[in-house]
Amino acid sequence: MNILKEWSNFLREIRDFFYRRGYMEVTTPVLLEKPNLDPNISPIEVVVNVNRDTKRVWLHTSPEYAMKKILAKQPADIFQITKVFRDGEYGRLHRPEFTMLEWYKIGADYKDLIEEVRELVHETCGIEVSKKLTFKEAVSEFLGFSYTEDSDYLLKALERAGIEVSGEWDLESLTDLILSKVGERSREITGLFVIDFPPVACALARVEGGAAERFELYIKGIEIANGWTEERDPGEIRKRLERESIKKGLPLDQEFMKACSQLPPCAGCSVGLERLFMIRIGCEDLRDIELLP
Image (cartoon, rainbow, N blue to C red; front, side, top):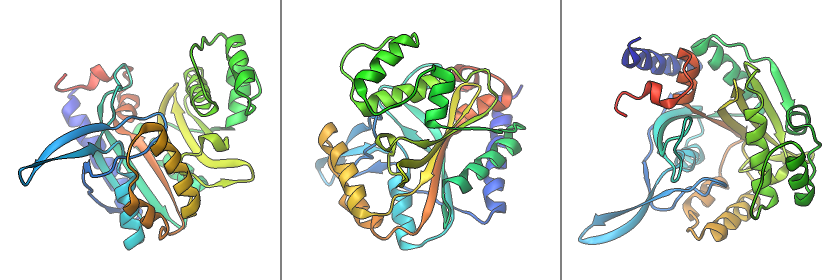
């Protein structure tokens, strides 16, 4: 197999998918003056020389902040294919640098993007994804216990499920661990959408009726897509991001906060393209698709 040719065809098909649906392709900076504040993701800091002085900047972990700044000024359906960078990630399915597809659809919610993701996966990989479970249903089916917002209970439930957990864990990190274990144990399922997350795992998703309007797609146990209906309340967004800023000791992007107050109703989604490409060609390790290991 000519991996270079297959990758080129793959990217062309993705672009065609979005162009046919009226999306505009955008490009945004990779270096940020203020970092993304993502739970469970660490940005990579870079020092650059500017006008005979040094400046602290960060490589983006996703193009989310810059794309939302575009949406605040010029609302339109947009997509981007870009390299992103995350510290401390390396393994069969992880690299500190990888290719991300991210898109935003105006006037849509997470259910609309689930359908677009379903169509994208079918068109690029020939896979029909039909199974869909709420977060709580998925925990019950794959881990054998009921999810509650009680850290002590969850630690004991994980131990009973054969999952070893040591050290200190808060509810947010435990919930993220539980989701990853659900994904791992869904390996026998071709495709699974997990929807309606606990509020503690909302990221920047809107919370309605006690659940975050967020979804993740797993194909053969591999996390492929992560999307949600965007929260637009600037006060709520500030509260969430200030918590992350304090926890990580990183600055808050005030320009992004201003953009959030002008964000149109929309939903957004991101896809790790190397992982989706692995599914397309039938391999199980990122090393199998690296042209320059």
